[in-house]
Image (tube, rainbow, N blue to C red; front, side):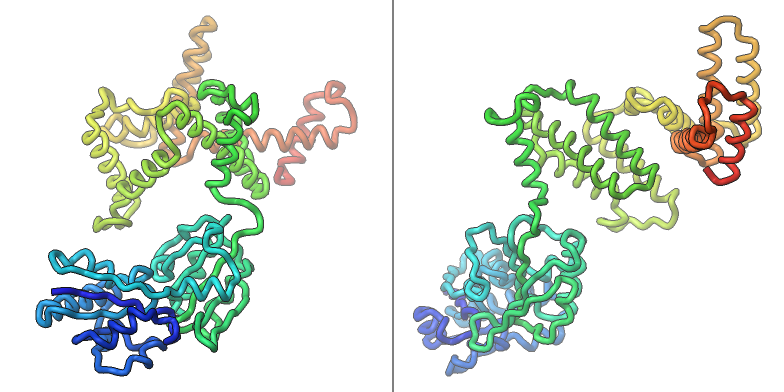
Length: 476
């Protein structure tokens, strides 16, 4: 009993190897995954193909499972069977992967064939060892972001229809510019092969797309991969790197992490997308620096960071990657909290307090807001908003009667806490509200400075207030 899997090559009969040719014509029983391949015309003998199954299958996954099952059944019936597939058996052939997994005690021999890769390299005049990435169009079409390093070239095989090309295009556009120059290769390895140069956004408009179409993606013109950036940071901390960077520790980098975070927030507040792009890069620098320090100290790697956050996001979204249904935001929040609690239980990390787990370094307004939200979840909250307003007024009165600095400090803290609670009831983020108020103050004060016409110290409060109201009326 034996299964021989034969590669038919990229298309031209001259590219079928001598060994494959002999097996194709000497095997007692020959099966083809598909007869829709140019090289099949050269096979002058009886064979059976599985093309008929393509018409009835719901999807490729079930189709390939069915084909693999049929092939193994034929081996059981006939003892020895040859199964031929386009290209090389181990390049983009899911049925072969399934057969190798399911064969069990049945001996399987792989007979090499030239894949679509070699003639594509010839048409493109490129070296595969120069970082070439190879992927299946069907897989990329199902993704939302391509699994590609944009600093390296990529070959995407089996772009067999305009629909697949369209889906691939949309995925690639999450990383590559719409106008990125690409090449479509049609019938590579055949005398009528076509090399079609066009922009990425145009690929699904090509009139030549068929089952022998491959997409070539050149690298971006600027090095921009995450891997390249990691290498830069690792180099900075290497023996031949930068003296300052080599001296940094997690603790010494802490102020820069805070500073860059606030600069990102500032760009967001200003709605300055150019600044946001730059500041996110500066913040990413801090993340990668911290990860590089951890790598050198043997604590964790960037792969650990990315795997951890990826797993967490998937776990906490069972309504996206599972079978949980959510209809409202409340349902979503409940699912999120349930997943978080399950994680803590599994990790043996049961907090002693409901408020445990909130970072002590949080800005005070945010910390107060989160404390109140957590307490409210277990019923530690008023039944309506009226007492919330009363509490704010009560705290103001207590400030009026405070006799010393310590009392005033405590009472002002209580007032701020009460105002945060009022904001929570009104569904207002206090940090955002106060930041917006700060920005309004700055804009209006700068208006006064601009239009005062003299030194502000020489102006009366009434004069400045007049300009303030003028700025306010103009929307500053």
